[in-house]
View 1 (tube, rainbow, N blue to C red):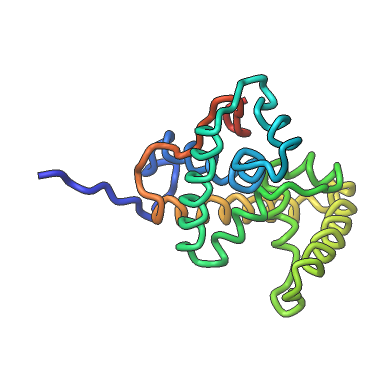
View 2: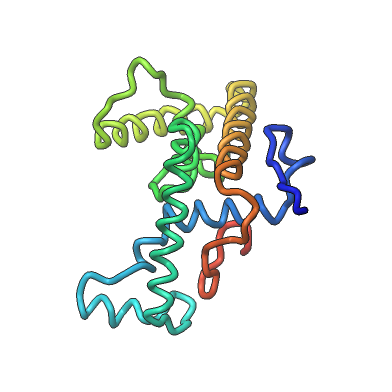
Length: 195
């Protein structure tokens, strides 16, 4: 009789398999950054351009179908998560232009760190206004990053909170995703952790 493996909320470094964590990060990054480009092309001209990946690999119609299937599965896992956890993954991986000082200090955690500087009571419902607020907070955070010596405690605490939020969100994603292999075809694309 087969036993089911359970992913718990204990610290990720001790409980979760490194492959599962890397697969989860690869899937989420691909979903927010490349999925639409790999699924389909809206015109014949786009289809001609989309037949070759950025790495020079030929992409077949089957590759496009696999990408669409992977997109649906990842989206269903993200929708099965609590909104706040899925939002953390979106903040971490959605492509955005951030001030250089913030990117240098927070790296892959930049989007999460910026969101952590916002307060719930001022958070707008409109997506465009949310992006404007993110940019405003990012500029304010860039000012604090520039004054590293005076803001060292604040920046260290914010970095630790962003790391904890990402770890918690990845654990939530893994709870709904399970222990299956990565659904993203990595041919022609490598995520942040694989470079």
